[in-house]
Length: 493
Image (cartoon, rainbow, N blue to C red):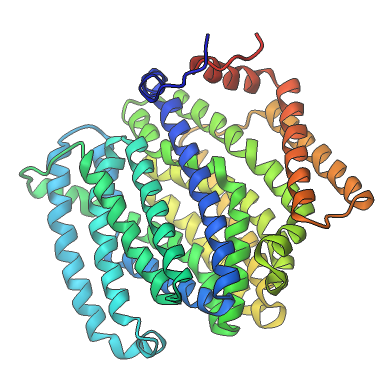
């Protein structure tokens, strides 16, 4: 069968896949493009404006993310859950729309009243942009919640992709023109507008009349969803905030650059997790627990398929990558990068587990597990950053992920069985070790002295790992070959 070259035939083939495969494939492709685009843009920012302005922008988006989550109070998660159950979708969306707008207005008045407390933000002239970011995030959340809750994960991922690409395009142009932090913030708003436009174009449901029961149904779930969401954003931002509190803006730039690069470990996990929530929620409503167990086991396998080699390769090549991509000024980030790579690998488990807990109507348990991890992260950050710098923050993130993963697993196994596919896991681990060991030995003979040699090592490692896994694990091989054949790509029988 000839490979598909026409866009129309490609879309027809894509729609011919099962929903889970199709949405996972779209989500994975989007994650790859988003992450690679972010790397390229960050390299440009690092060489153009340096760690100081970059750190200031990272602090801005940290506050924007935290305040947007606080303004939501969990009703977006509640609405996504109720819509995913398949009943009264328009009424749930109508109730959500009214509540969201009312709460957003109240929260903005609250922020204006508390402006004197935002001393650093106001002194930098960023308070009004911060208010605008909360409004923009709220508007974006309204449409994205309806799209995601309905199960249109491909549309949601396309909107995120548009958000990222437009944001980075505007930011790169603005930075090259000399606008520095202002250009980065302008691109932030441009990206949100692009994402909203895509979601609005494919909005699958419309708000309709609702009753008191819909308000109560959202409120009952929202309280724990809000706490869980707040814990999630806190877990992702507390380390950055405390680095900024104890250290310098430049240190924030070092730390966030390392954190962003380490996120390559989560390529596949992000894609898989995006598909899980509405699918598990639907299975749970139909009482198909065995299907959830199988879906989770396969999700762990495909999340780790790229996470394990990315972590192993990053540990060996991380220093060279930072030097040749970001520049010598960012070398202080290398020790933290090594720890963060392991932390991101560990976070695969809690990321999927906490998503599953929320989807099986256990937001309270998801909150407890996530809160314990966030408290561990915050406590260790507070003690270790003054003594160890950004390496201390990286260790705190690793510890928080372990705590969340263990507690979340204990909670979820009380509802449904949770298993790993042990043979694929063993094959992937062994292949990652072989790849990393061989690259390490070759580096002693042929040191990484240029970007060209670095790229050759990355390509060689990818080919070696992929070859080992495809040879040793028939299940993964046939799954991937089956998708390739579906698109007309010639592969062996």
